[in-house]
Length: 293
Image 1 (cartoon, rainbow, N blue to C red):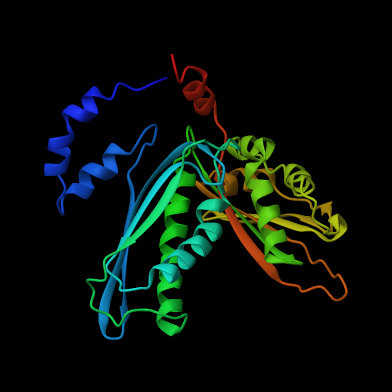
Image 2 (image 1 turned 120 degrees about the vertical axis):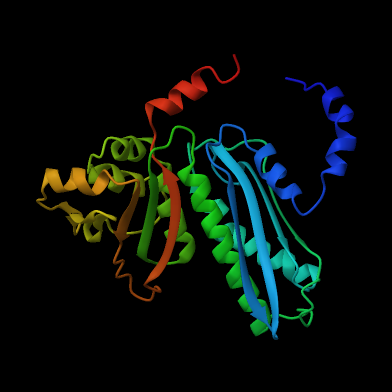
């Protein structure tokens, strides 16, 4: 529906007047929709004896399925860095963070992540991909990964953060596709909402991708702060305690560990990727059942 621009026009002077060091507090709250928590983080690193700070704020809750989703991400830094290198660092970081998140499998028509650098830290300007650039890029990766996890944790109606780590893939791209397939699966998400160690749904979700892994070599395990549970080895189920499964999967953060052990002659091994999602609950249906009305 078309928004009435009048309230925005009428409030423009107040908005401009609010642009200050404290303005980020208002901004981080203004961008929220069905979010239940503010998402922000900052960190500092040292480059050439100068302290460089990178900070971020974001929103994101529903219609989260990259590229990117109904999410807004604003990153600021006082680092002195050449614009093309800053863009390169952001593109790579987004691929490894925000674009590995899925809340509900629906991609929004509206999303954005932007990074702004003003150079006020006083560090020697980063003009090539040397050690300072790599340190900055690593810090940006860490920041964006933590922000992406906050977005996944705060998915609409979510009660649990789900992480899927795939190892032993023939390439990073294949590992990424497999991990995202698992955390996007509605059947996996509902099983984890119910604390059900239904490993068959995970194996099924791996099979949704065009990857060339051997299902007879797959190992699966669930892990959380409450414990570790192996459920599948060499593509076959293992005996496990249902009571322990309920305990492990009853935690608010759950990791699905997938080891492919590809064993393909001539192919690189040990490639890994991680993706993040959340469970699918009754509350998600309630929110989206009458979202407009």
